[in-house]
Length: 287
Image (cartoon, rainbow, N blue to C red; front, side):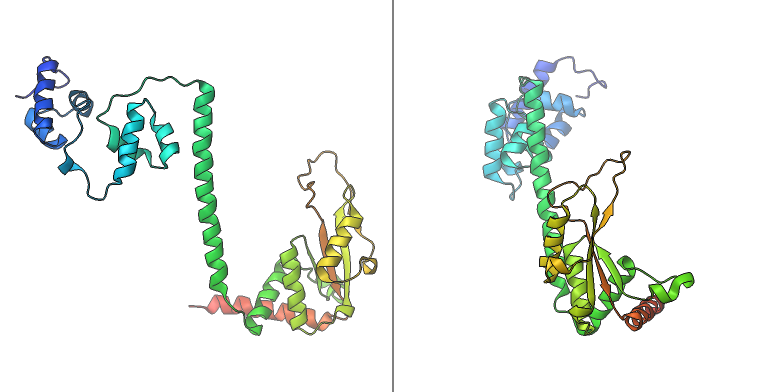
């Protein structure tokens, strides 16, 4: 018997038929087609409280989670609460418990906020784990570097972070001068210099840091990193405080930047610059 759109006048009689068909083992689709009920909300109401027959359950469904989700739903738990408790997606929970009545809203705004926060924190942990796995995989993919690869990587690093000469002061600026706040970048740069046979005696170190920071602590930190005595450092460059700006680098880990000069390095600078343009040309012709 077809029903007018949006009108199910004999709802109780229709529910009795729907329940009977459900208990006879028919699926939702079969009941819908048999009774000509095209409205999913109405169908849900007709089958409310009636579990689906076993044969309609997916063979790969997570039975333990499904049973637990149904138990929690009967206790009045919401989708959000079940998701946090079981770690399942809301779409799965909806499929598992859609025939059960909806619980009354009993939680306060504070409880709702706490549930949402726990859900967000769980998702944040998952994203962070995925982020770390991606980084670790990429790190392992690099493998051992050849001397040539080390040289080219050092050239790219220097061109991105080091000082360059200028046409108006070429004689004064044609030297290696590198500055960075990342200890790993400093380590790599020193390894690059070692591969070019640059002795540590030719290196000059200086800290560039905000005037309100602990200069002595920063010099001790960088001196330990590069393996020299802090007394060998040149006078630090202090950055003046601008009252109109809000500094964010004020934590205990702030050590400023380390500047590394290499004396008698004009020829090395020219080799580095020439290699950089060689890299650019090779990239342009790469297929």
